[in-house]
Length: 104
Image 1: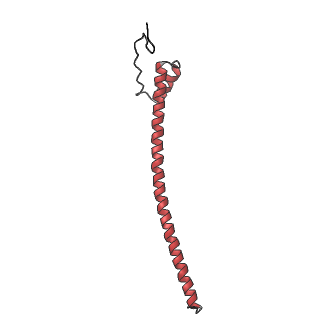
Image 2 (image 1 turned 45 degrees about the vertical axis):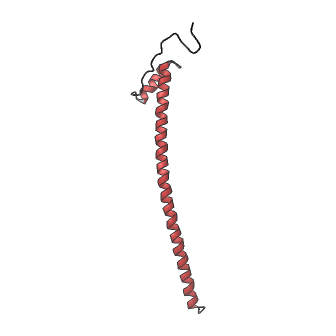
Image 3 (image 1 turned 120 degrees about the vertical axis):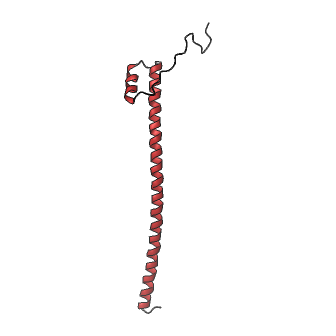
């Protein structure tokens, strides 16, 4: 008698699809029966590869965004220096105009 969760068949090792190209994996997925062990393994291998690619793309996007933040921060600093210089020039122009008009 077989108990719950036990089978009278010996376990079958999962096929190794790690050395297959994506194209070969897609062929394997379309060739096998759905829910067969080889189909499940090929689908899992393909999903893991896609997740790895997405993770790498996300990390690249994070790096680019961090660089963009640094550049934007420098641009903001330069803009504030220009605002300060503009205010200083405005004050100098106002003082010069006041002297010319004899207000000072």
